[in-house]
Image (cartoon, rainbow, N blue to C red; front, side, top):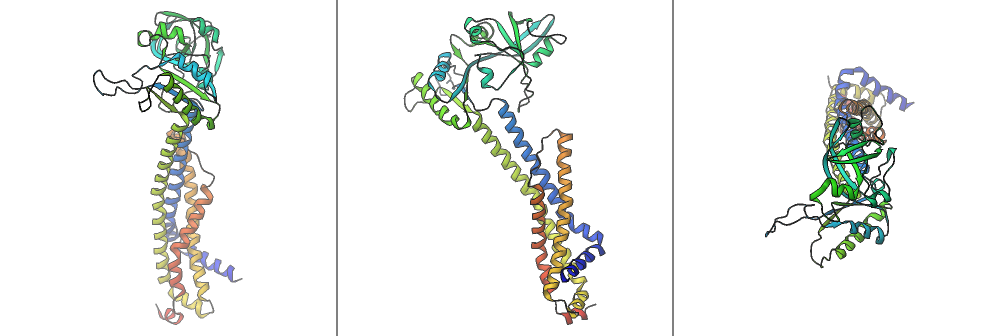
Length: 411
């Protein structure tokens, strides 16, 4: 019965001043809404980065040529400027390294392509048949070229959806002939669309063909002999990536006759490390946003404490009367603490609703991904209750310490 009375008194005090109660909760509302919205946006950004990097190829390791030095100087010309890789390196990796699921050499260039009165400027990649496996790509129409096509140097290509749309807007691309530069090729397949990459690049705006004819007939003078620009490696699983990368490094140093202490003439990157680095960045960004938004919760807590202190002063006679009629100091303490917690939780509920709505609106209107975490509701309400208890403790204690006789004497 006493608990029911405490709840009734607390609710009555809150409802007696609706405007003041609403303004008291405003800081908590803004704080919770900001934390939920910012956290949802940050987690969404992290998920987007993960999806985009995974879209490049899961468990993938990329070997690139190292940096050349300027003639007669120590000027670093940048990664990839020294064409130090060759087809034999890729063959050795496939034959000698355990934990490798697929390997593909690659050269690339740009070229104008034309077919039946239409033309398009696009990226051209010369690769091995396992390239699609390494990059987690599939063929939507037609087929991928086979090892026999690659060994014979047959002039066949697979085109991305963007190229197919621009070259053959009214018909089926498979079986058609196109000129890549001045060289005729037959289209034997169209890739499954992948959309834009994380850098905004159209991943469907490309042509893929066997390494030999693309290297000799399209890329031309830039790549000579058996040289390649990249070697793509797919590990069997994430756990094998580190070991495969270490083994590939040792193998290439041995093949390139690099003495101990000398710098590698190649560079190795793996998607797992890139993903971890990007996720660490977005997580830091998310925590920063949440911390900034959390300041609003502290401001809201201070607001609750101020209003509760004002309420204690205004209701001094009421407190004295209740204590004179038998209410204990514990009852007074519980009543004011209950008021503070109720106001804070009420503000938390409103803030949570606004935060969830804000996350959805940002996602729909801004095209920014949002991921609403499952812990948003319980954590927001729990923290709101915590704010109410902490910042309502001192006003409640002051109310409970009032002397009933002195309280009754006040106007």
